[in-house]
Image (cartoon, rainbow, N blue to C red):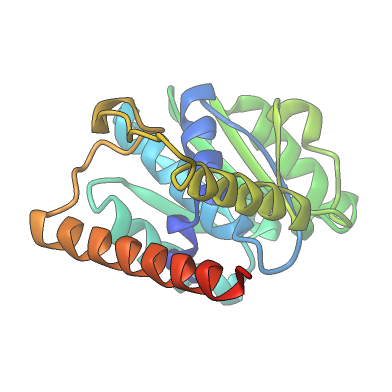
Length: 213
């Protein structure tokens, strides 16, 4: 599990939305951070509510999943189980958070026990690939997509913000008004940034002057 994926704006916004909603569904494409978003949002929700967390995941990822929860929120009591073990679980505690990777629901033998757990959970988070089992979609609630289209839209928005900063007369807004950017740049870093910007502008002006008749 690559928790550096959580720094990508698309993934970070998805995690924040899941926490705010108290659950939800992540439909994602391979390599787009679906598993990381599922675990991060579920752990944060459990930490916020002081509730136990149960994660249904493939056995080969149990250790990695537990380690990720511990790294993000060491205070959370987390149990990672396989879909086959869902039928053996005691009733969920009040306020419980359940996170399920729905690609594991391959057949009624494992699907039904997980569905029973999902119905009993106070907060349900589900992640699945586009080809995954949709049995939990309705219970999970609002859908968040992590796919190439979402990543491309984020990249285009970032480029438009960057381009806007180079328009004539542009004055950067106060830090507090920028889109969730509440941390100011260190003075040294900011000076270096502007040095780079002015150097680029000077180079562009030189190139424009050379092309004039």
